[in-house]
Length: 66
Image (cartoon, rainbow, N blue to C red):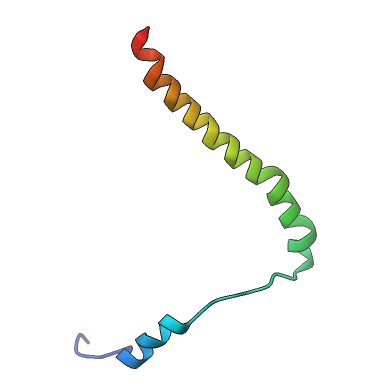
């Protein structure tokens, strides 16, 4: 099985020209999932990142002086 060639070099060179693009027109996505993501998930992720950064900063600067 190791001697088989599954993808030829010509086929591999075609991946350089490949571009994926899609448009989501599903009503469930447009009216439920996207608004949910934009109003709840994105701010939650940003606040968790800021909280983690703040705790990391506080532990590295404030705790050693105590």
